[in-house]
Amino acid sequence: MSFLSQTLARVAPSPTVAISQLAREMQAAGRDVISLSAGEPDFDTPGNIKAAAIAAIEAGKTKYTAPDGIPELKAAICAKFRRENGLDYGPAQISVSTGGKQVLYNALMATLNPGDEVVIPAPYWVSYPDMVRLGGGTPVIVEGAAEQGFRITAQALEAAITPKTKWLIFNSPSNPTGAGYSRDQLRALTDVLMRHPHVWVMSDDMYEHLAYDGFRFVTPAQVEPQLYDRTLTVNGVSKAYAMTGWRIGYAGGPEPLIAAMRKVQSQSTTNPCSISQWAAVEALNGPQDFLADRAAVFARRRDMVVARLNGCRGVTCAMPEGAFYVYPGIADCIGKTSAGGARIDSDEAFCTALLEEQGVAVVFGAAFGLSPYFRVSYAASDAELSGACDRIEAFCAGLR
Ligand code: PLP
Image (cartoon, rainbow, N blue to C red):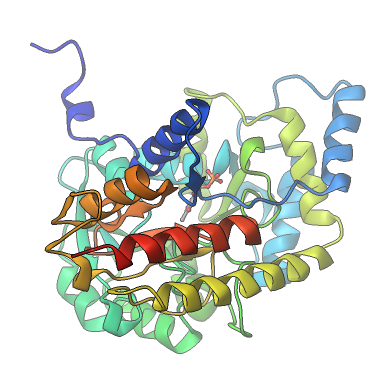
């Protein structure tokens, strides 16, 4: 019998982390690789946030904290939810964790029993299905096809719900497609949830501040206030404030759920990093005007990358509403052979050959549950993006 747990055998390592690591190793070995595989802003953390962390260290705020967040950060999060989302949460309804990832993980660990089902729209963030499996639950995948802007329909959601459904995990704007749900599109889904009172919604709002062309971000508890008592509204500072390494995520939700998540956290990581929590207080309470400036830079890059990818033979790329990803389709490339002699029979084969032959790291669509596509992160410099697009164009032109 294996020493490792049977639960772990059901779980795959994160393909995005694996590809980023491979690209780093190739670079370390002297290969010229442009990596568009990572999901993090290339901007630096703003100076006022760094200064708050340094001040926290100097002031000796370097000890254990309350398990799910210092009162000052909880107050800042309550204010953020009120200011930006029109949601009223008290401090006892707030949980702070080591990244949004741990918030989601804690919530699933705190609620799932064997056999419980979790509805996950595809393409999905790679970690959702595996986190559900780690918690003993069963992911139920609902496809959001390209023709529907990678959004799921109300009918598809309705059809996926069973008496065993515990959660819908909702993510807008989305990783990996950048697709965002308008108020009306989200309303169609919340209407379905209103007919199924046993289903809760975990809304992953991580890309809230990365929205373009006037797209108005909305979150389920805001669109349908009657869902407030069965919604966990998840967010974090990683993407908006360029703080991926600081590891602070948070959520607002019903008090008993938050208490259960606190129990999980108190027996695993104890508390999120004290210094990062003080930095997050400054991120949420400090100046917010740079968010729009950075979003404008991302919007410009998005426009450039979408135009360039649509110019590549066999590639079609939709214009997304937000995040910093595009999800081009490569159906017309499948069945061909690359200039280097690789048979392109899947999006994974496409991405592997692209990395080996042209030194561009992107993530294959199968990792996100919808093929044949690949994900490009445009959180990279203009020079890197344009160089990568040149190489993708050359790679596609070489397919026979
Ligand atoms: N949710 C989505 C959709 C993400 O893309 C990510 C990070 O890639 C996370 C959650 C986790 O973010 P954090 O760095 O706060 O753990």
